[in-house]
Amino acid sequence: MIKKTHLYEFHRKNAKMEPFAGFEMPMWYKNITPEHMAVRNGAGIFDITHMGRALIIGKDAEKFLNYVTTNDVAKLTPLSAQYSTFCNENGGIKDDFVLSRLEQEKFLAVYNAANRDKDYDWLVKNAANFNVQVEDVSDNIAMFAVQGPKAEKTLQKISTENLSMIQRFKCGWTKLADIKTFLSRTGYTGEDGFEVFVWDTPLEKPGNAVTVWNNVLKAGEEFGIPPCGLGARDTLRLEAGMCLYGNDIDETTTPLEAGLGFVVKLEKEAFIGKDALQKQKTEGVKRKRVGIRMSEAGIPRQHHEVFKGGQKIGTVTSGTYSPLLKIGIAMAYVAAEHATVGDKVEVRIREKMTEGEIVKFPFYDPTKCGYARKTV
Image (cartoon, rainbow, N blue to C red; front, side, top):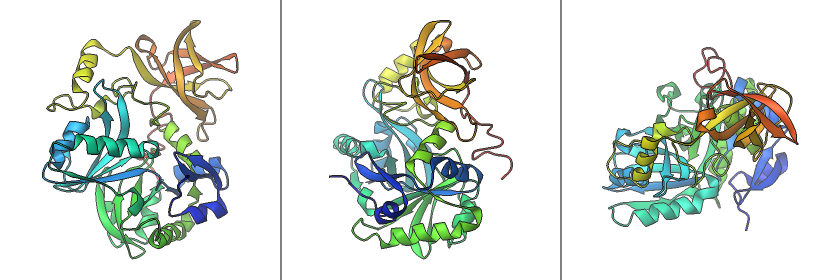
């Protein structure tokens, strides 16, 4: 049976709905491009309640999480977060996710909607030898993302706490519209912003979630905030060079191939996948994830082939038309020897060889867009 989020009635009345990861979700409200540009220039709000959420609590919580994740959990202080991956024994990515340390022995893991059951089962299975409890709280916490350079100013209007004190990849508790809320200064758009967790709000009693959502929209009116669908979420994350599980990473892809080596801490004690990743690092990867910016008209899509000098060197995993850059962009895996930034390549789009160039992520100028921009 298809699932619904707390905001289903709002979406049904205002959005183009489609199935996604077992949920009926809004793809767009007015149109993808204005929603996308609102986030780049001001602020937008997304319902991301379809994502999975689990609490990991107990004396061995840190030790357990260090065993099942690739990043170093010991580096997390209370009310801080880190991006990480779960890997299988071969070093393949089971999922990418964000882990927040709420208290010394209490953590919140937020993972992809398509992997809700798989990730929860993986955590429970591997927790057997540790003094921890793993609790699925996905249906008891509504989750939104308020993203864009005006995100903080929007939320500050209805927050009881000073949100400027929560820095990037830090967390905090507040009340929004007088409702208990956990905030994490993270997101999936490349922009500054917060992921908003409306605590203790079961699906069958969505009132608090609806109140927070409506109050955020009202608070952001002066910045032109729209509700945004998954269509804009996808184009935004692709411009920012962020992976989509099932497209750009999966269990046949390692973090080292995906350019996510920064979340692999091989100096840690044993963790799942460590031996395979250590071996791959020593031997060198044979393929790498790269960005391709098209030099001429054409929209690259998943499975399109990438060529150099008439030779196939790789395959596109995600592609779109960039609303910001007004040109086609793509992620692809190419042979490591052909992954040099600045190299000219061709993508076969509808049987036509279309020119492009390998570029660094993000696709945009990070001094003018994204969380590190110099001016707002």
